[in-house]
Length: 529
Image: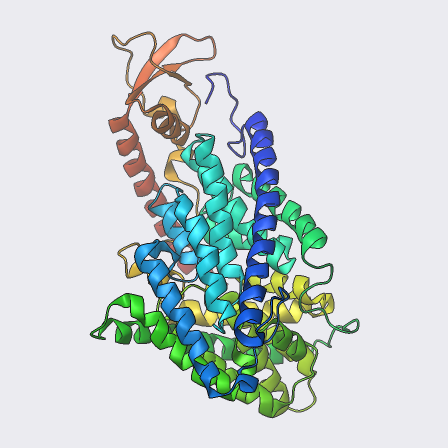
């Protein structure tokens, strides 16, 4: 921070923000092109394996016209992915978002180039061979890798690398689903680990540029657009949306536990992990033989449910088989996304609810169900709400959808210690704290912890006496120094601050915060209602 920089509500350098927004726009273009490439590869593999032609459009795999031999197609896809993970990079294993979080928290926002190459190829093979996943998880990881590589090439700071990594991830999601606002919200709720304009504004730029790429290269219409304008239901529907949300929370809890229980079962097998995707592929092949709608990305099936075009018998078979093959495949460590399966299962849950409780619009229940299951499972209710509205354009359902998402999130937060995303990281020894607050060092000024001036070299970096200690910590980390000269507004030396002072200030800030919380609790107890 420059010595004369004034204190602000947000620590943002306007000139640097403009530069980062320019970089984010470039990343939005690149991520949009990568999304188109990934969708093309998925369509190509699907056509080659199931239709024996060279089409590139997304299609619903149908193994039945090939005969029982088609059961082996997902097995072959699993073998290919296992070889890529073993001899290419094991970073392709998983559904993308936990890997992006790990890169941010553990890897200093650095993703290697080989991940950007192998991840989309492995995902295209998995989904193209019938894997029950969507393209969003892989493109989030691939877009994030592109943003990270771009930042590494420019030798940007760690927080700027994180911003561009997340910009690429959000842009990939926006280009895939045409949901730019939800893409920004998933960045804020899951990936950025801060609420600062310096980070979410570039992410928003990348997301909307990627939306333009989608409109130019992929599709104009929302992926699950309803056939007509959906009228807003009456207020009487709100309690039912709440009930759908709670049911979504229960299903989310069960699926999360089953995913990791199944993963533990794989770990007990006397075979190398590179063969696990093939085992999962066998389960996918058998399940897909009986219910083909459960295979692949499933976007047409989701669209049919949110438009109320599927009967409950078909929906029941889809939800059961989809859950089984998704858990078996995801737990095997193959490469695929979680958003599309959650959308399909949630939409099916809402459709079944509408059939059990007559008098309710099946399409409205399906939309609430898919939003609730996604928002609750990922602990991102704002993203889940806006995503459902952006992809269906059922804006009249906004209150009901939000109630469902909040109910599902409340249930999973209360009864599931970690989400399906953070549990994977916790098993690697990485605890993810999702409760954001102002850092204690932001509340303490440098003048409160500095020491009297001593003999110190004139070329030591300087910081203003009124600056926050957090700014001093960031400056020390950026310049790799252990001490700063503290100056007043005239430039006269007022003292020094060293790294040890930062630690003591942080400890003091934490003690003060605990004291404030105790005081608030006492006041709440003593204050009459």
